[in-house]
Image 1 (cartoon, rainbow, N blue to C red):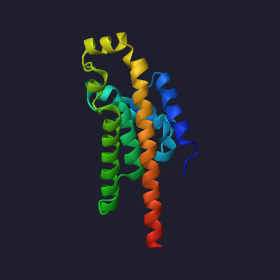
Image 2 (cartoon, rainbow, N blue to C red):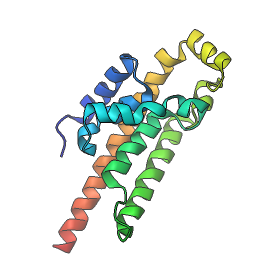
Image 3 (cartoon, rainbow, N blue to C red):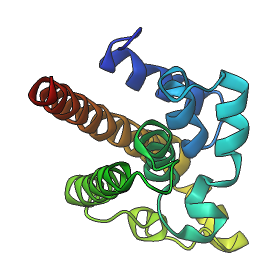
Length: 164
């Protein structure tokens, strides 16, 4: 299934972030091949989700991971309720796992500033939150995402063996 190791994907996400891509873009692009996306498509798709959609809402790293999970496991056929349930499960696992690991999944709460305001962004920059704290969130999201993918693929494989 994977062409890169899970650790390499996390490092790739951190590389994208170090190159000044948003957290959401960084996570999504590191897993683009698993989503059937090109790097360019992933970077564009994730472009409007950084800093909690620029409003301090759900952390963009977490949102990028949710986009990966949706692309991999989301419902695309209205009759396929099994995929809807699976998507709900992986969504909950990501949100709950990220909040458990980091205390919350809300960007403003993670950073302790309101990034929806110019003053909040300026404070985040002066405290080096975007360069020193946010990479930790990118790494955390990638680690949790990889774990969810591994578990979900094992579950799918087990289900497939049962039906064979």
